[in-house]
Image (cartoon, rainbow, N blue to C red; front, top):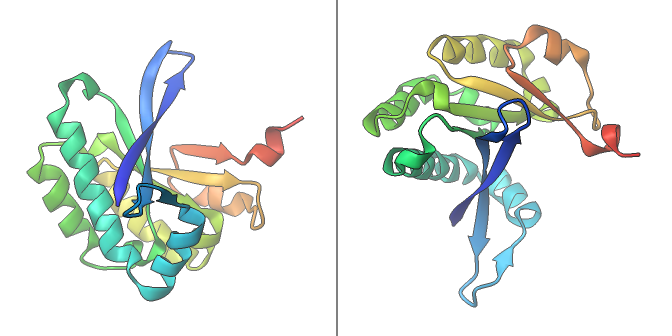
Length: 168
């Protein structure tokens, strides 16, 4: 596995302001397997949990080891399984704090499908993590499960619209 960073440019700041963390799976021959292929398998087999810990740790290493990224926020896709794990916050803080990364520099992205599986638990645990400085993005709003209830209830910093809502 490799992590890649997709920069996000802020027009208001006229600068690179954050980055989305992308996971890639490289084959021995150097080609890449599409996340659309390996993520569903990882979710079905439960391997998404250790994979996500890998992504969190590698992201913190990059943030801590590159002073030119000071102030840049990284957003990581987070499966619902982590949010319902009572040990998630403790292990997360151990990793993030161990690298000396501010909690405010870590954001987590969810899709509505994932959150709607258990909105009550998601809300409770997101609020607890938000009180520690982490932020949350709702990704791909407007596809399939569009629900303004998520937007109104959950402690979201950003709602990312699906391109189908903005395409002309």
